[in-house]
Amino acid sequence: MAQAVEEWYKQMPIITRSYLTAAVVTNIGCSLDIISPHNLYLNPILVVKQYQFWRLVTNFLYFRKMDLDFMFHMFFLARYCKLLEENSFRGRTADFFYMLLFGATVLTGIVLIGGMIPYLSESFAKIIFLSNSLTFMMVYVWSKQNPFIHMSFLGLFTFTAAYLPWVLLTFSVIVGASAWVDLLGMIAGHAYYFLEDVYPRMTGRRPLRTPSFIKALFADDPVVVARPENVRFAPPPVEELHQD
Image (cartoon, rainbow, N blue to C red; front, side, top):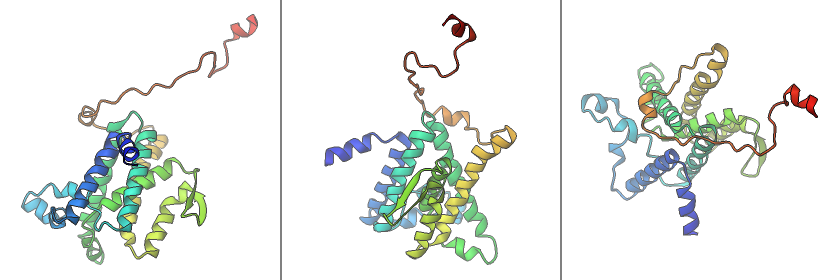
């Protein structure tokens, strides 16, 4: 059993493995009182006035209590982060990292701006950890890129992946969790999906190009697609047809 878990862990792509490891270590550290959540949460005043810039990162690593909700989000993180990195972003680790960076920036910006809007500031002030929102963003992006995959929710009913974010949002509301957290993830996910997939098809321009300095951080192996011998992917030339 331990060997199987170790093998599963080693087979994870680099970004998924790094994020999952950082999240688990952070939450275990908080549970054992080695790390205080008070040093991790997003606090714009402490970031700006006391230069505690690490809060811009650590608020994405803490998932609060290590309970059933924590296990659910670890499952979503391990599954959908892995699926995106291995499939949609295969051979494009820098682009995947940039997607997470874009999502984290959008989520942070929404919370900061929302905290300045009357009647909404109180709700946004309660959102001090954005780890769940970033995980939900990955679920949303995956569902948009794989809308026709059939899924089952706890064996109760089946649906296509396009509705997965809405099913999970409904489940969060039923169990009493904050819908704001999931909605923020959906907003960030849709912003990325629109700018990366929809807008380029409409205009021919791609605004979310990964900066070269980020690409320099990751050395991706080229993706090679094997082509079986004597298999054609296009009609043969006319000359060959006449020779037959």
